[in-house]
Length: 149
Image 1: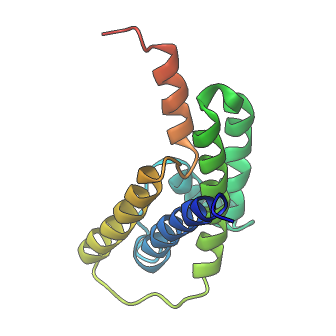
Image 2: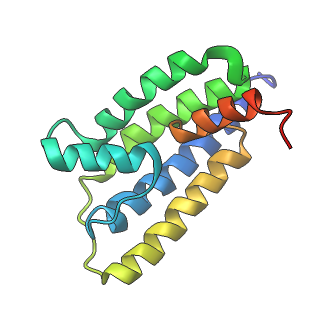
């Protein structure tokens, strides 16, 4: 039992970070038509152009080939943490889309959304995971070019 508690806390930390990230996107960025960077932003653009499926599903579909390409080369803890983080973020993006967004000025929406997304990403990164996407690409590039100055 003592061995499983740290794993449960780790998954909880990943879930908390992804929830904060998803709230920032759905309550402030998406309603103000502000696009976050990375795969989530790309998924938002694709959803806006195509209209279906949801942003979370598109994000998950874009991330799957990155996980297949990255595989175990990015380290097992980072791989598992990123996989869990990607699934949580996709679920929270779609789940929190049901919450009515408050009306706010675009500048304030960018500020609040940026703070929530940044706080969420910080919690996820401090746990040793990621939300997938460009984080996996960066990790792979870092390994490939590790010897460069």
